[in-house]
Image (cartoon, rainbow, N blue to C red):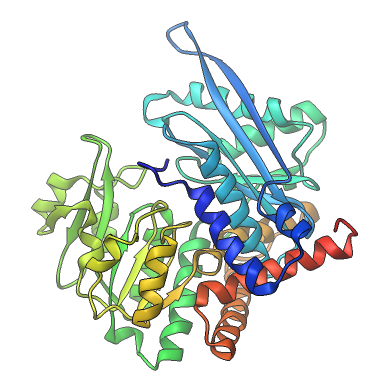
Length: 428
């Protein structure tokens, strides 16, 4: 899923090496934490609808489970790579530690394109993924969740296969399930809402009212849509969103200077977050190249799509007006771009904090499933707000105290917590 020479795992390791140096971690600890503890590579043979057999490659990385079971999504994507999965599993470890939930980092994937697969074929991939890993995942080992191009239905097929193999019910095995089948109310909104909870706190710290701000958002999937909804409720206005057009395999940006209408756009969006550009033009949207979102004259940028979007090159296109960047996506900003943003004084809310609402609510779902006792939506989102705000304040306080970049502060808190857990267990 990375392009050109960009390697997300090398970037994740470089971020870790920087923090390990600042924390003066011992060599053994550095060696332990800069790679996944375990990773699984396997093949999933599927009988296709036309009678042929196709073999799909699957992965699962468990980066670190010193603080609790591994936790992380499963991506279905035609350009999935093991290095992407490794990087995401590492970032999940830091993310869980940043918001202080008792979980470690994991990530999974299958190289496939759901756009070209029937529901039955997708079901066979889901069940095959679980069959390959049934002894290595579970409520007390490794808890998967949805990610790019996977959804609640995929999770339910996986849960059903896991329960069939092991016998009995184990709803805590997987999160992101349908609400009627052990899923949590509030889970759909959680990641996007979590992003805006942190934006709200950053604006408060900067002395800026949300209603006086404009934002531009990259992506129009679940995270972006709910982030836009909550941001609008706070009084902010989004002037540009970008999305991937499945028809011609190109990304486009959609601009409306007086503010995009979220419900209007959702009505012309497919289930993968692709906006119909012809219908958008008919509704008065300016259709621009996909990377135009980053050049908007706004106060807040929210990259909420894929990694490697704000680079040493694209960071130079960011308007001087931009005061806050909230990373709704994982790994959207490269270290070269980080240096520029830090020097410019942009308030960056790093991915391990900004988009941790998803894994936090996944943790809530896991707790509810294991207890077989479920909370109301307002209780879930209230708990989420408390967790996200507390994590934001801890990161902000450390950044100010040491005069360091917000990403470094978040990583220092996270890496230190994980390293302590490894020491306390006697691993190092």
